[in-house]
Image (tube, rainbow, N blue to C red; front, side, top):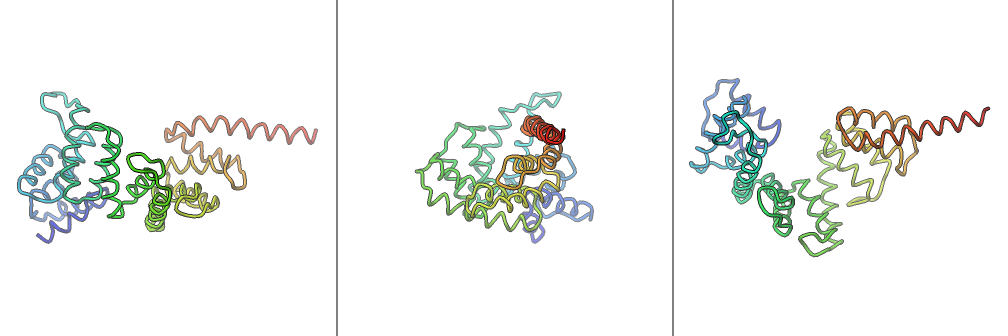
Length: 284
């Protein structure tokens, strides 16, 4: 039972995979259907994982509904009648929504955030911004950083809730504090989002140099969005302009398939060439 509780602390990303893989590598006996499902999931044996998670749901094991949502969201469930394994996206979305509801109601913050996103985007259900706000708030109260930012945006725009800039600022401030914790630990996504708050002055005082600093930390980790943002800031932001470095980061982002970076790269490259031509004329 202790092992089960330990594994349930790792429902996301590498934490889940490392815990499940370690369990399998050590040849340990699992305590539950949920544990065995995690082992199968980490090994890429998705049909076996699916069966175990369904058993776990029937046995009332916490977390299994979240994993079923995750598997449907990722397209890891072969739909009935699809002999060649072709994914039924609409069916997957509907199933993911069903399991997201169950997981969210059991109190899993990531599930609450994903359910809010489904309501906000009309994925697997009809669009309902009021319900999206409800679940963003539920996840935000558990300090889910993305949910906190989305809740702040909804208060700022009045989407699904009465527009309230004071409340928006309060939640942006909470977001900045939470993101700073993860950014300091080296999480590239958090560094990029924190930089964006510093650039826009949301939840923190506007600070373009601080924004550039956090964008650069994330960019150096290979995050394409951060590479684009740093390039954009160096070319057009309220910091010392550096078109050569801007071009470098835009090229890096473009190589990763970032479409906005590709478009901006052409414009910034043209501007850099014009500056060189202008300087050359001064010395003719």
